[in-house]
Image (cartoon, rainbow, N blue to C red):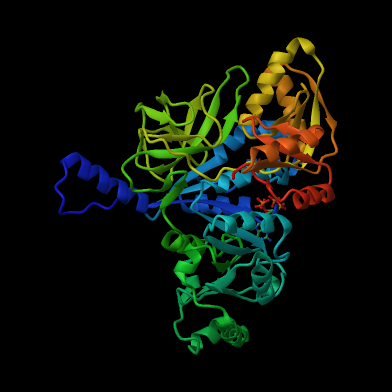
Length: 541
Ligand code: G4P
């Protein structure tokens, strides 16, 4: 809470509170969403270069391998180590502390991405201007809209012959159902690409391929009739004037609409050429929200509440198979997280203490003494933490917003080494906690069903069970369409349904009832015929 100067507080409390408010205001925690190949890695790299977090281009490229290894799970496994380092990239830019949360590139790991989006305050959407809105962008934007995450858009690859910019904006409005306001406008594209006109800064920024932007390439032009425009752009000056008049039909940039997630400001550029990126970053630190509040089962918690709270949104286990080490990623939501200070683990009621919490700085990690709202802290965990857990300074609250999504691919686990049953169970349980897969147990049957969003996860699970837990298993396909969490106000109705559809009922790891629908048609029929039952498509209800 902002400190009221009239209230006499003990000196240390006042200092801490002012400090907290100041630290919150200078934080921006965000994720980049895009379809593979749109330029997320390239943009990330340029942002890190601006922040001085990396010195050379190419430092983030290591990640790229994971994207291309679409069927090579060994490669993905190798990349897992790298991806811990790039899970969170923190850097400073113009006094603002930016935390960029990485989202996996491969669609099979989209659930991981959805969970990461619960830990951000805003996002940047990258679109390939030669392609427009692609399928994965659409899905990710749906999640952003669901959570009203403010999103800025970077229209990338203007150095290539792309699609008409107005058409691209219309596509964003139509497909993504969000209003758009261009804050810059391209002058030509591909071979004729001259640069952009920054509408909100009223300046012309001339394009130089593969060169650092030079101050002389930025020309202040407040009046579009200024002859300087013709001097620099030649015949393209009139086209720009026409374009700018045409696009005045788009609403003016309204910060509030952006903050509420209804409007996305658009920037044009080329990440590869580091063009337009600075304008994006400058607008980002100016307009993107700092941490404000988090929703819990007991209401909203304000970021500047002095009491610490946060939640776990990601777990990386067994990075080094010789040690059973796990890193849990904590998003600080309110107050200050302090090293060696006891925190309350709400789910178990335990008091936990962390002696080497880590912050992530692009490629490096460092042990920190304190972390503020918006920060992501890596906690070395010995098995206490699960995804979705809340840590507080004592309050019994639980943060919302880390749902498990209904899996789409189901397989039954066949144990190939009965001597290692215990290890198999332990492995499955831990992989489940890590969010790699969801495990369901059939009622009155020992058989277990593993559900995932993508098929690649099965390769990863088999490999990790064998290497980390020495358990051998096979996955046999099952013909289920979806798993839905089942509830009803009337326990008798639920009981009756469970009895009737016994063969298709299972329980998730938390013991909640799940209906395994075989087809879309049968699911729709059950929904229609059982109005007193509620079929949930995510585990959060
Ligand atoms: P992703 O993380 O979203 O999957 O995309 P990434 O940055 O890896 O970019 C995908 C491809 O698009 C890369 O080419 C990259 O160089 C290129 N790219 C990114 N931004 C621009 C841009 O502004 N203009 C042009 N012309 N290309 C761009 P690649 O050939 O797949 O990889 P590489 O060999 O260049 O590394």
